[in-house]
Image (cartoon, rainbow, N blue to C red; front, side, top):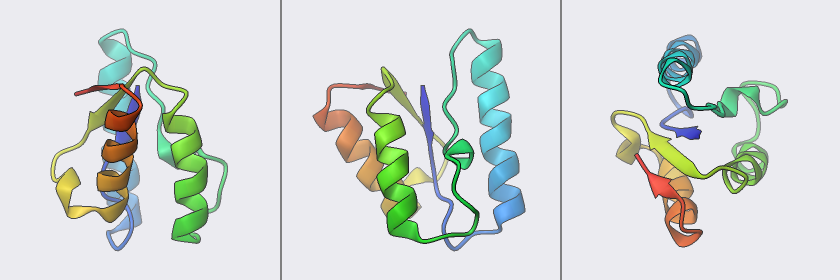
Length: 91
């Protein structure tokens, strides 16, 4: 399950903590969470490069988990569009 939410232009420590908390919660519920902070690229970094890698991670998943306020993020909107277009379940 790919975790999607706002990252760019936000406090990086807070975002990492939010994504990590979501990953823990999903793991406890029996899911295998895929956290974009674990994409192997440095943070912060080039947004386009992150999106290329993150979308590659996303399409390997069966579903996408949208964090609170995801609609504030251009990247999360793109990830949702890709997930929906590929037939992934949206949570």
